[in-house]
Length: 252
Image (cartoon, rainbow, N blue to C red):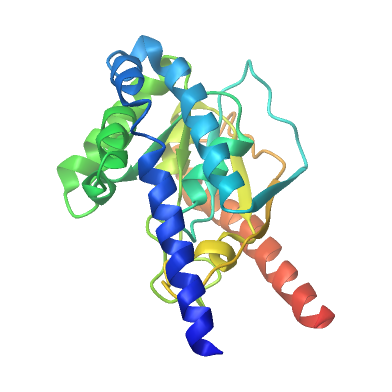
């Protein structure tokens, strides 16, 4: 039985990687054009959303969205989801219609084809380099001043230990939100780890539940409030994840 499961997981992973890479090849020339200028970023974003929705569909995933508060087009936001899976990027693109920019780790640029466009459109950070971390703040400020939202996974990296519910948050997202006086949007991704984690022999089609929590206002806050804002956001997502985990255990 285990052999058949492992065969399924191998096919499952190859299927995912194939779709991620091969769907980019036919539109490669178009992507070259729309990533050549920041003015064309909204067009690129629409293409990226369509690509993400295609990947989720062919993998048998179905987004189930819960909204405590609806996003408004005329406002700027700092999105802060938990980070557990390779599909977090696709899920984030799927549930958010307004153009935003990811702040992501530099290592993803090594992925063939995907990494090329990731480098051209995202704000990259080398977390081991202090100069790189500072440059991220400068670039994020510039992009927000042009009206774009920002998405930062505040855990920084996906925890190696998958038993960890939520890793400690970094401060960058909250500092930027305070400086620009824009709301923090806590987001809970409940099922991404279960559906497609970084453990190779795991995963399955199914629902991907996402919750957009009530926004946390930053008007009037100063950098002295950074830690309390970070803790407030962490607690919202952590409590949601633990409550959902407890409910699942009770139902089994």
